[in-house]
Length: 446
Image 1 (cartoon, rainbow, N blue to C red):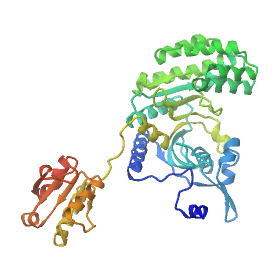
Image 2 (image 1 turned 180 degrees about the horizontal axis):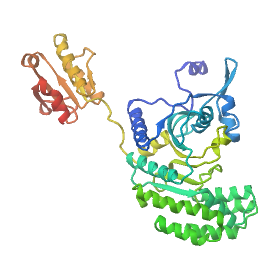
Image 3 (image 1 turned 180 degrees about the vertical axis):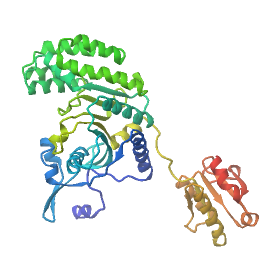
Image 4 (image 1 turned 60 degrees about the vertical axis):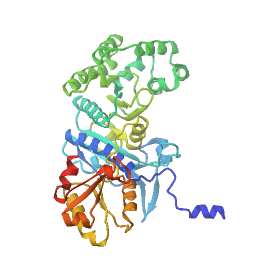
């Protein structure tokens, strides 16, 4: 019986979450902050269906993707829920190749679906804030990504963040320096550097040693890389000395040198981004600069991306270069709350208009309408309760002001305004009576 009762209890699907007013408003602050930056750089929105043909999704995400993708058959067609924003972008690039004007700058904000095991902060439906530019080979596009990551993160109120930047050619050259001779050794070395802070040098040395890389050589180079400090210009100089004879690494270092100059012209402070040669993000499809936003020391990342000049073609689209990055909305909000960054949109309403009695209803409606037309958010009481209960309801609605328009006020064309942020429920000390015609201007001036 208990099992049957649990089945009938209203509940949401595990790994999903219902978002109420204040949470939705905070999420909206994040998406609106990002959107403002995207559009200031000439990016346009793209909305793709959450349902894609299974053939579009299958084989694009490796073994884990095949395991965690939502696939189903409906109406005789094999379908799947959108797994990320990148494969739909590749499909759009292929489907509309004759219509898209390159460079194509697009941003996409919407839910994606993965059948992961639910855990704290990890959802089966979550929102990606994704931005990419297709068709630009120049490193200017990569520097622009850094500038956008900086502006969005700063705009959200983060203080001690860093946009970390590396380069795939530099990483490949680093692997060559420690003796990597095949793809497996190269990837193990690169991924080892990427997770140094998480697992420690001893575990990384064990892993690289298991694939035949000399641990002493790996350790020696790693120590040199970790010991590099100074400004980004100084980091580039140090890397140039270490890899002066490695042509592959020099390609990446040259790109990073150009990015240093370009970001200066884009007013990205040098102390807000840092070249980190060991950053790889664990993905092997990056072909150039790699990006990650570290929210604070020991807190982890809230965004990441990189250049992927072969990915669109690999995913079924045309041969087009691409670079971009992505924020996870839920992750951003969780870290903002952890750091107590108060970036919630206004919670509650501006004004709660009480209804003294039915004879005063029309007067209250007229005032409420006038305030809405002036741009304020206004709720008028519809409970029919006595005034004291209406004021308690105004508190629960988190209204800043409550208006009382009783018979005396109507006769004199006045309204009593109670400042609820000064005294919850209202009191004689936190109120004043003013002309009805002045109420909108009065509240907006406050």
